[in-house]
Image (cartoon, rainbow, N blue to C red):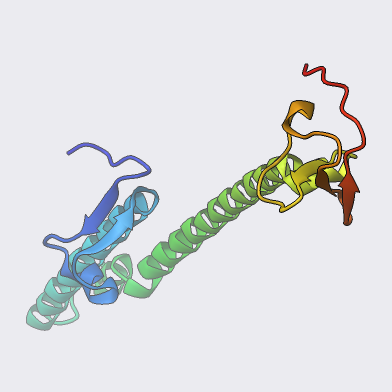
Length: 183
């Protein structure tokens, strides 16, 4: 099985029904969570293994009585402490808290990077805005009906009306003279 990429969704399904009970069957995980999912499934498997061993040990104790230490072996209490679920689950819980902190930190870093990219794009877009161009002292010259932009002096003649749009306001003007040179 190949490792998923960052853009590949990973679906939670399979023989591990424990996780599906919490998140629902067939839930799509992004690849960043796939490793955490696998660790959780591994921990769940380890817990089931410890539960089975504990049940076997309790069965053995009920059959042999309390005599394990008196017969030269490890006492039943010491054997039970090896499989103490509270202690083992405490370690699993501590690891999960550590992983949770790392996931939160990574999410915050991605959020800040995306926010910086957005601000950069907004600044570039603002610098290209027609209003920003007008704000730098440029103007737009329209015909009198304001239906087309005048780009050359040859498009108007003396006596024609034009409108000039500035960064703040508009002027209605009359062409007095054109110099006739189109550059």
